[in-house]
Amino acid sequence: MPWRPMTSPDLDRVQELADRIHVDHPEDRDVLAERLELYPAGCHVLEEGGSIVGYALTHPWRFGEPPPLNERLRGIPPVPTTYYIHDVALLPGGRGKGHAADIAERVAEHARSEGFTNMSLVAVNGSRRFWERLGFRAEAVPGLETKLLSYGSDATLMVRDLTTAGRR
Image 1 (tube, helix red, strand yellow):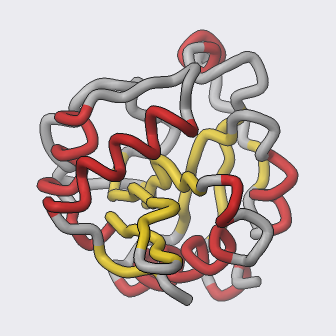
Image 2 (tube, rainbow, N blue to C red):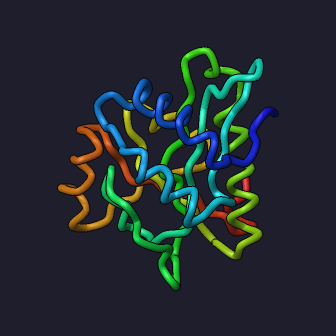
């Protein structure tokens, strides 16, 4: 599949995509650039026909503490407890072709290779069922409800077990 590592020259196009796809949850270019700078192994772009039509931003983080939207991380935690999927975004023309499932599996393999036993994310915009098909399940964390509302009314913290028992 046509995913490749994201590079600095890709950031302008990634910002354009983010602005088009996440109208209700904009993120500044410096936030996207910081993710690439802090953890380039977790940043990918999807190319079709020579054009970037999607991106994925992922990184090690602390379980049950999703980073606030449009805020810099200021660093990767010294002892991360989850591999976090911040965003997988595709233009409509790139959807329905298995690209999101492909990058999710690539990210899972990377996370396993780095010693993580789980991945987590906040499902938004009606994506919960999609993530459930990829082995994620909703996880309630006391005190997280208000923060999740900043992601949208349907935001759900989800986790996927990456141990042998949790493999798809």
